[in-house]
Length: 476
Image 1 (cartoon, rainbow, N blue to C red):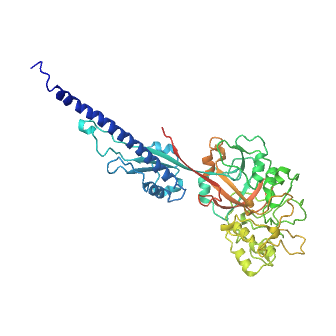
Image 2 (image 1 turned 135 degrees about the vertical axis):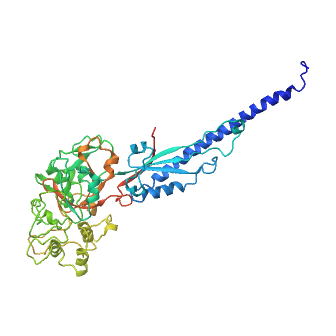
């Protein structure tokens, strides 16, 4: 029988068939496992991106982001039941996610910038490899995405503050601040920003004076505290139709930019070279200051204004009870009681200014041409026609060609940041985190300007300044 070869094929197949089945199972299940891994990775990426896209700095952003990710339909098709489960962690800083147990609570959605999406462990629904005793390792994937808002077409300047979060928590619309270009980096100081690679020392001044500054809070911007106060005045005050500075005519590169459509500021506008503005306690009257800043040269803490401008006491004996009464008496005595009531009911100086232009906060970007102004019933008259102190509301010193129609020419968009942390903290993310909108209530004088806080820019209420970038982040 030793020489009998009958049935050898059966023995051969009995030995080879399990091996062949194992190889077939390896090919099939290996391909399915690779597909599951790729699908799971794509699912994690898509979930992280979907969640990050909903991180809009609102208090409810985290629950909204989580719901958006869970609503995805691109689930792994090779996974067993439960393969569509996800877990999330949120953070304000990428480094926070290095701690496996860290996550922002749902109530902290305004701080969330990063989201980590992790899939549950999943395996194949059925496997040939398990028939031959091979253990299939479960698949789990993790992805991190960030949601960043970058501010562009903004004022190339920083409002210095050692604790920007504290400023954001205490600032209120209608409150007046005294901002100063004083060469310092302390709270209340303004510092200009140079573009990355800027070759001209005057580029920052042109960006400050410009009506459409093509400037973004970008990586590599440089802090500049060496601007002369008179140059700062010139760059700011072209908005007020002032093309004559302390030392003479404004430089031609700044004089090309137009003023705001209404330039009432409380001084006798005898000529385009009339004296510099100091706050008058007699007619003509400017927009009322907070009572803390009454006087020709405001002194004291930069943030001592309380927003009491509507009830601040009158400055003269014209029979008015408040400074607002005086302003309305001087500039709007010829208006009807309905117009005067709307002006008086304005919640902030910015609201009052918009009302004078026939606008409101929902239409503040609508161009206004005061030279052919249709709604003259609301424009300031600048005082009685026969008064030697009369001030014109319509610009007439500007000699350029650009339209004088933008109400937002009286607005500064300033990054609120810790200036002592430069240059290390001068990142696009940090500079764009808190961007404050200020209304210039008076021209700048010796580098000091009074400005009313309008609000912080937020997604959806950003005046078109934010650019939203959502992207995956490598963490290995």
